Structures are given as C-alpha cells and as structure tokens.
Length: 390
Ligand SMILES: Cc1cc2nc3c(=O)[nH]c(=O)nc-3n(C[C@H](O)[C@H](O)[C@H](O)COP(=O)(O)OP(=O)(O)OC[C@H]3O[C@@H](n4cnc5c(N)ncnc54)[C@H](O)[C@@H]3O)c2cc1C
Image 1: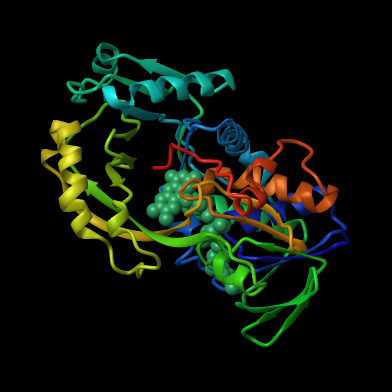
Image 2: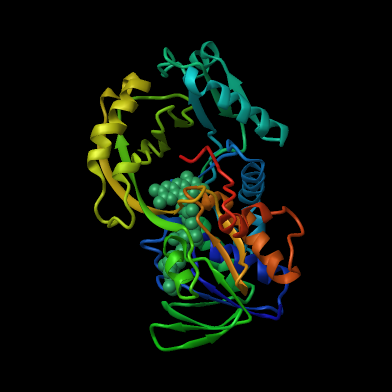
C-alpha cells in the first residue's frame, strides 16, 4: 500500500493509529478528519476510563497488557518538546465478584489471565472479608482482584496526549465531517466532507466509534456496530472504603472511586437497551431501579449516598460478539476498520493503533497478532465472544 492515509475519527482509536503510523514511518502522509475537536460526544471523553486484564479471551488480555505498559510509560512515549503528559494513572485494581453460579467461570478466567502474565489474585470469601472489610461477602463464592496493572486514568487526557504527539510527529488533524466516500471497484479513493473538501486516500481507516456503521454504509458495507447509551453516575457518600478497587458485582453493576466520590453504572437489560438513545438524557430510572439497590446490598455503607451528577456516552456495541472488528473487509482492499470495542476500547486503543499501523505499513501484524478480530469472522458467522463485557 502507498502512503496517503485518511483516518475518519480522531478519538482514542484514530489518534492511536495516527501516532503509531507517524512514529513508525515519518514519510507516510496521515490526515485525521475529526468533526468535533472538543470531543463532547466522543466515547473516549465520556468513558469510565479504566483498564483491566480480567477478560475471557487471551487476545483481550494481551491487548490490555500492552495497554497498561503503554499507559505506565506514557510520559516518555508521548512527550512533546520535553513536556510529558500525565494521565493520573491509578492502579487500584479491579475486583470481579462471583456467586456460586459464576465461580467456575471466574476461576477459569483467572487461570487464563495469570497464564498470560496478569497479576490477578483469586480470593475466597474469607480472604475477601479481610482485604475489603466494608464488603458484604455473605452471598459470594469467590473474587478476582488485580494486584497491579489494573485501575483507572484520565481518558480525555489520553486522547489529547495521543493527538498532540501525533500532530507533533506530523499528522494533520482537520475539523470536518466525512459525509461521503467514493469507491472505485474494490478501492476507496476519496473522502468527501460536509465543508465540501475532498481528501484522496490510498488507505482509509474507519475509526468513527459509535458512528462507524454510518461510515461503513458509505462504502456499502454492513458493520454490526450500533450506538448503545451507557450512563455513569457520580455519587457522594460518607462511606470510607479503604483500598477501594473498581468493583464488578455479580449482577453487572460496577463502581470505583473518583477523587473523594465514586462513579458507578451498569449495562441495561437487553429489553431497555435500544440503539441511538439521546446522550443528553441520562437513564435515572436505571440508577433507582438497579444500581442503587445493588450498591447498598454489596456495600451496606452505601445506603447513604447522593447523586451529584451523571452523564451518558455511547458504547460502539458489536451486536455480533461484543469484540472489536479490526482489519479489512474482503470486498474493499484499502479500508481498515477498527470498531465495535463494546465498552473496552480506551484500554485497547494502544494495541489497536499499533496493530492497524502494522497492517498499513507491512500488510500484516508484526507484534501482537490481531487477526482473530478480523471482519471475516462476522461474514462467516464465527463469533469470537468476549464474556467479560461490563
Ligand atoms: C460510559 C462509558 C464507559 C466506558 N468505560 C470504559 C472503560 O472503563 N475502559 C475502556 O477501555 N473503555 C471504556 N469505554 C469504551 C471506550 O470509551 C470506547 O470503546 C472508545 O473510546 C472508542 O474509541 P473511538 O475512538 O473508537 O470512539 P470515539 O472516542 O467516539 O471517537 C470516534 C470519533 O469519530 C468522530 N466521527 C464520527 N463520525 C465521523 C465522521 N463522519 N466524520 C468525522 N468524524 C467523525 C466522532 O466525533 C468521534 O470523536 C466506555 C464507554 C462509555 C460510553
């Protein structure tokens, strides 16, 4: 492939691709078309910004192992003019909890994660009660806790740092909306924008997040990625929870510390989870009906808490198997998709950016092989299911 790359979307995925491309080859011409430089509705700016290795597939674990390595070394990697960015990485750990029903799966996942080098401890109920004395462990059979390598950070800061470094390395960012793509047989040749500009491309990268399905449609391709609203609630509580991790309750409700307060959320049940719900409408009923009761059950001190504020963002949700779709579609030779991260795209951004840059520059993966995430599995109806979607 030759050297003019146009990336649609400049969130964590598009910016990571731009950064790794320019880092590897300063001769490649990289243009990122991002319609909103404020990232007001971008998932990367609205997420819970957390990273874990507690996944169910080896590839997800490996992508996040690279993710944490990248985040730990971000100051050196993404420094511009000697100024090192800070993303306030806090390795507070994830605590996945299981009742009897989920204990076998938790143990199985734990064996996989540790075999790949993740630093996760399996804790029986007695050990849980000692390490987390504020936890109601009466109905629990086990927990898995990330001793290191898991935690949370400033997600918006990560995007800004990637963007600034990509720009410093020579990537061009354009504030415009890609409204059409021109296809010539098996190739995409141009991106047309709302302002009326035309960008010729040798390679196009679809990094449009929750809007990537629309971009795929411009090429006549059906991408099974839909925008699913997810709400986050910022709550205050007099509870003082020592060594509080990001806790995942067996029912799917999660919470973690955020400064002096806590943030929490959950994925709604399928019957209250249609596509494209407006982001400015937070699902407050979900908090009242599902989240608060679960929090109060798991942490009795959370009986007293108050919602300070709340916001929503979109998961770019792959309805096929809840894993990213990364790579070419067999019908178009020069378009690379990097979509459908289904709630874990921020932490997979570095591994995805590196992998997509390898595909563009070498035609294959040269470090971590991401081909299991290729489009072919969707077309051949071979799901590659990630069970640990939060
Ligand atoms: C509530 C919530 C919590 C989350 N928590 C976590 C977490 O804890 N850990 C984790 O790893 N992940 C988490 N995620 C998921 C993560 O945020 C996303 O997977 C990731 O940010 C996706 O990055 P992206 O670059 O693909 O999408 P985005 O950040 O949305 O970027 C896509 C960009 O494309 C632009 N765009 C779209 N269409 C066009 C067009 N036609 N022309 C020009 N520009 C266009 C948009 O403006 C946008 O900025 C969470 C997400 C949400 C919503």
